[in-house]
Amino acid sequence: MKKIFISSDHAGFKLKESIKDYLIKKKIEFEDLGPKNDSRVDYPDYAHKVARKVKINKSYVGILVCGSGTGMNIAANKHKNVRAAQCFNLKSTKLSRLHNDANIITLGSRLISKKNALQFISVFLNTKFDGGRHLKRVKKI
Image 1 (tube, rainbow, N blue to C red):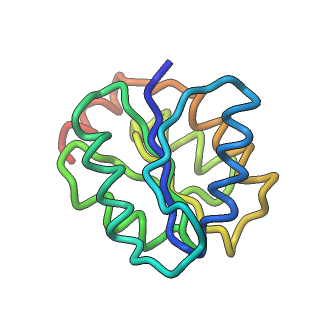
Image 2: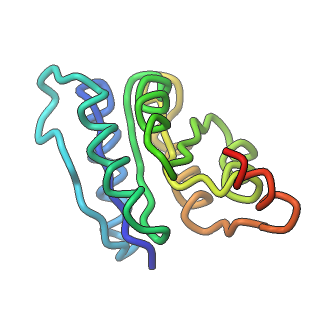
């Protein structure tokens, strides 16, 4: 199993905690990089923490949650070898793995339900990169 790092900002904290409960229930190991509560924090600080971990090893993946998913996505994608995908439905999630070999999923707690977020996490963790013609494109990133 891949090593999973998870983080959020204050807006995503509650959903992050629900995702952690889901991962525990599924017996999936993860490391929570914060924050520890829903006090106001700056999302780039937490996106960078996860991105730094993910860029170290190809088998690492990340889960980032903020209000929209956009801020975390932008910050994480500043790191070399990080391919963060903002996912908003099952198809975008599946394609982010199949075609883009995304290694971080970003979610917007104000835009998607808990039920959908957990479905997206499941799809993200269980979908393999197709490689082939997509590998050539990913290498150009």
